[in-house]
Image 1 (tube, helix red, strand yellow):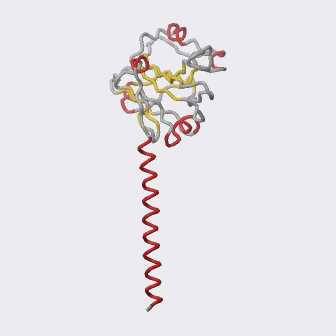
Image 2 (cartoon, helix red, strand yellow):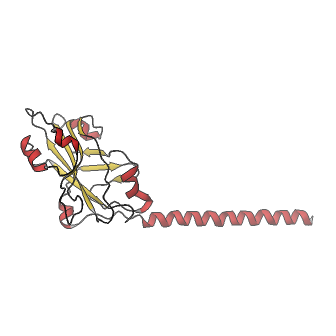
Amino acid sequence: MDRMKGFTTVVQMAAIFGLLAYGVEASTKNDENDECIYERLSGEDANFCKNNFEIVYSELGDASCIYIPKCNHYRERIAKEWSCPTVIFTAAEKEETYVLIMVDPDAPSRADPKFQYWRHWLMKDIKGSQLLTGDLNGTVLSEYRPPTPPKNTGYHRYQFYLYKQPANQNISLTEEERATGGSWDLKHFTKQFKLQTPVVTTQYLTQNFND
């Protein structure tokens, strides 16, 4: 009988400690979630962001007009793990064709942007119907390069421009442009191929995940 009581006591204690351990784990998870604050951009940076333009990364969600949070290793994962985002423009015209550009104007830093612009992604021949769903199937002129801001250079802006594509323009990059993404003359490129004022723009900010 005493053995049975002892066994019952051990089982009860194990259950109690199990619940306590579960409580600690749940509390930690909740604490992590509480710390994961999606801070929105403000001022001049916020003005660059327009409505109806979504930049969606796996697990993070829509990164448009926010600082990429450090929680859940998001800054590291956006730099090293995730592939190109899903780009959605809910006001796209189905029959129109568009050009998408992603650049970093803050290379190597916002205080000293001597390598502006750093080209991270360039795609043409995107149908408006594709932008409505995010299933882009355009012609890639520059493969997606994830944001990898150098250490100790502060926050970098990662900007997305969407243009209507003129029907009579064979948009392309020179051999020199294809060789590197840095010091890209975005203004010259858009002027050369008669890309007018962008239909919509947005951006997010992130910094080196070790900072």
